Image (cartoon, protein in one colour):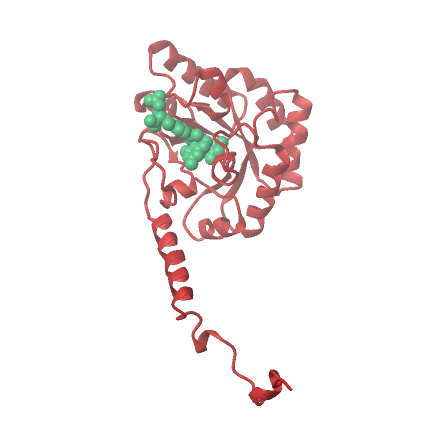
Length: 260
Ligand SMILES: Nc1nc(=O)c2c([nH]1)NC[C@@H]1CN(c3ccc(C(=O)N[C@@H](CCC(=O)O)C(=O)O)cc3)CN21
Ligand SMILES: CC(C)C(=O)C(=O)O
Ligand SMILES: [Mg+2]
């Protein structure tokens, strides 16, 4: 699974053996420049989902439910998830949370909305946990994350993201569940992996978290291209005649009449 926020990224993923395109609320960081996912709205997620829908051909399309779009009431949650599917063209939605949202997940799946769970490090809960912190590090914490994952599967989720947990805890969850587990910062013992597109192509020039491997250097390549453009404009080597349209047969004096 890989994130996509627009049609170009969706087209790229469509030819790259990716099973699921995720319109992640991480677009709050990447697209909007916030330092968390908390400010992202339903309307913004809907806009990006529609952009991705137009470019996507093949992968299953999942959209993140943003902060406070599903924890106010069951009715509001289903209305908001319904927008992602009916107006955005998503195939399913992803919700952060464990046992405390299991009855909501049950209600959504009863309404024929496919739900992906997300447990462990939950970026929408940073104000409760004190930041982006690995979860399930002690016995009590590990039992908590495992119980959350089991509750979400029991409630009817079709898959679950395991974020920011020790690999042995992820292994315990993967062996216990029958739905696919998709890890990020959760080690190798999962059924699939997810990364943010911009992280995996090596777009960012900032220090990356431990769990990211940049598989390319798109940021460097793009910077080189922009520098080459500005240099070529300044030394008048761009555009060449081949990059310009043909000249006319109009005598020069006719286009710019000589002064009297
Ligand atoms: N570009 C991007 N990539 C992501 O994977 C991502 C986002 N944005 N935004 C939303 C969340 C936030 N995520 C994050 C961000 C930072 C850490 C982080 O700094 N983790 C620490 C672990 C701290 C600990 O040891 O408890 C690290 O050093 O990796 C983790 C997840 C994952 N998601
Ligand atoms: C990192 C993935 C799992 C996510 O939730 C996001 O991109 O918002
Ligand atoms: Mg997210």
